[in-house]
Image (tube, rainbow, N blue to C red; front, side):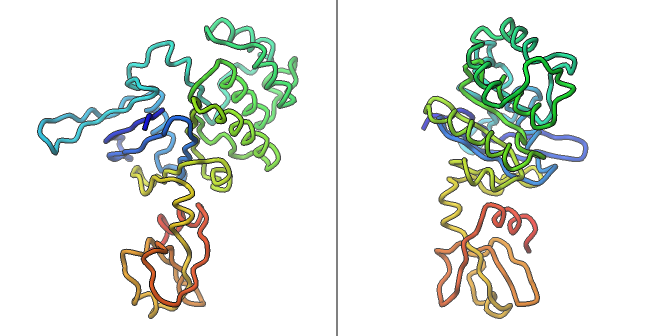
Length: 290
């Protein structure tokens, strides 16, 4: 399988945080959702992928030696050629354009920056998002600024989109509009998306793969449909929970009616009722459950 992003044994240390031995892959032609609480390490990982920060180099010899590498579109993330950088469209959580400019200014500036800038595509997205061409960006709402960032990312023929919380703080109508654009982008199997979010319902709608990150470590990384089919919420008494194979239980919570647990359904035997689990359930029980 060919990967748009391939992270192997990636570590980044700060004074009070550590991204610890992260391994995950984004298959070419797919959408990977990166889920985690605020402070879990999503933005740090994205900055490493974009080459904005450097990861700790781990090397060694021997069969069992761990080596670290992070490739983006087949190139080392820390040594991306200029033309490869043009194949990456990045949307971070803040609008990075000078607030005194308008959309016409930005279009002309981007034309001089990107060799593959497509003005007709830019104009298409400006019209699709119903953004005012002559209004200064400082007068834009948060949703309008996010739409502008996405329009620019999509207008230089990028092969990979990297999106950090692109729908955070937006109303459901705007979020749905933006998600539809991402779905259209991925129809070409040459295109790939990595999108981080804590809005699990958005990722559940569009993603092919899901990676859960917590406190700098990867908890799960798998095909989304497999996660939703493999896990379920079992409700039972405390005594019944003790009878279940502990390896089947990913986390549980006590409540006034007994216990609810996130379980691997194929490992559960007996006459139990197991409700479907959402991505939010899987995240909450894995992180907050006992």
